[in-house]
Image (cartoon, rainbow, N blue to C red; front, top):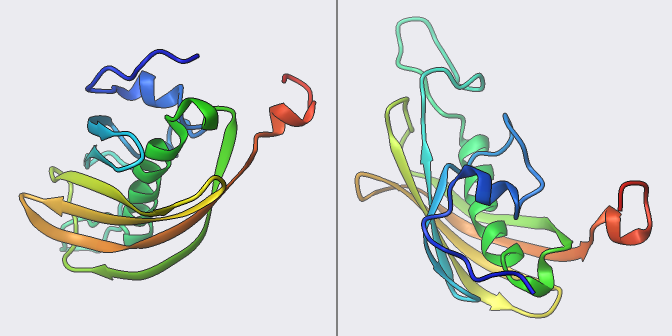
Length: 158
């Protein structure tokens, strides 16, 4: 059995839950966690991130697709942190009603909250909200399915 989570979860602890690694791991820490209910994560946006959209004469912007992925990763941590899900993979099947309210720039600290809308043994739906300075920058719904990890199917290394 996995030990209970001790908050805040740092980057190393997050790597023990998610399969993502740098530069694709987009969550810096988890600051709140209520099993099967909600989670809050932090994404610090830095000027040296390679995927920032840059236009001459304009401030760099975090692409909405990257922000959406960060929200999905926080939601995935909520689901995969549960001991019976630790050896599974999460697949986002649908992202719906996502609205982008304003750009996110280097120096912004994005507070991402994911809450369970519906949760069954292998499928569910999460509501995600990302904020900068209490102002909503993204909100939407994400539907996911859980599947076995490649390791649990007897592949090499598992």
